[in-house]
Image 1 (tube, rainbow, N blue to C red):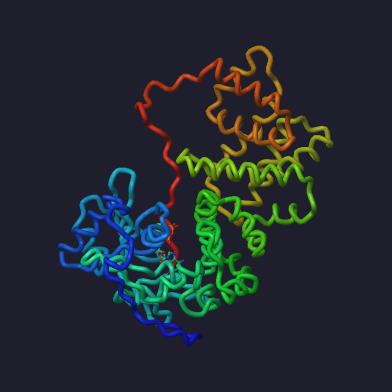
Image 2 (cartoon, rainbow, N blue to C red):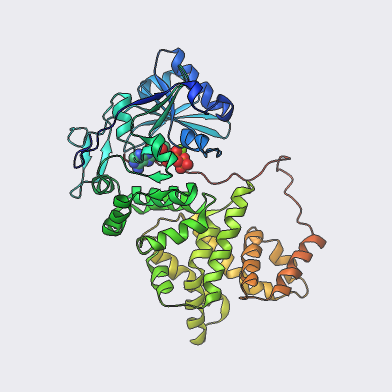
Length: 431
Ligand code: ATP
Ligand code: MG
């Protein structure tokens, strides 16, 4: 499969006694799925981030299973199963909040009639089933192609992934340019994993990002939205943001902001983005909910702020100026990244509420605090105060106000219920 590249891979099998992936680190739901498939006579392995992160001593974000069972066979085995996917079919098996994604072994077969490529070599649809070895070699990075076989608990390494784990290297399986052309989102995945794992991107794969980053222009905006959230909600947003700019990919995601950032803006605005991302990373680390609306409110604020000031100079008052600026900026941004309306509306609310934090008299604070997006707007305001964009005393005033006037929780909310963190398990890339 390694066309355009002479690499030859050989399978290495590490028996249970040679590796430290233990069942205790795998979720019960994932184990259930693996065992049931295995008992029904199918091959069933944990693969991808679930193996990689456990090997690194990290908590996996989710568990992915690869199996010899077809999607229909998986569906017949689990009543909590749903088949999804347009580009390729996957089974989602749900246990409470946890979703285990089960994919049938597939081959990397650009020549197959079942694989649809566009003119640039991008894979549009790919549903050719294959064996486990083929499945390993169609994956993106060598460290993502490690399999933990539930049958004998052995670790299967088809692409020298263990060696790259040791060297902390992200290496594409096969020729980087071909693999990026098949799916340009792999460039974003490289950046995300580099940020999250602290790995380096292998040299050829790194250079190819500079040469082929522009292919991201052809990626549907809905898929970029999913990927952007994975990047900014990974818990490593600060690092990923820096890498996206270093690798010159930011221009294809946030074209307006990229131009703005290159225009040498005030330090405080740059600090604001950085500080907000630091906070987001902290929230993820503490398992607190994070929202797409907040991320977009932060990243687009420099543009909205600047536009609103221009509008105010043209005698438009503060609130309409913010509203007009917010709508204009979003209408440009969604051409690249399809932010759903329900989130962009909240971002706009966060912006429009900002001037109201200066008004601490009479009933106004109570009115503001009763807004459904108050908490997010308050966090946003205080981050601004931390970098000198608003006054710190005001942030403290509002902190005290909330202590003195605790917001009553709606009665229908069950005790212990927390808003769910936004997840995008449904969208998968064409590999
Ligand atoms: P995480 O779950 O932490 O984001 P992951 O490596 O598990 O990391 P997923 O998006 O869950 O990433 O995908 C699971 C596996 O599927 C990957 O490890 C990789 O083997 C394969 N994969 C996913 N997307 C692609 C892609 N675009 N090209 C090739 N292989 C992919
Ligand atoms: Mg995963």
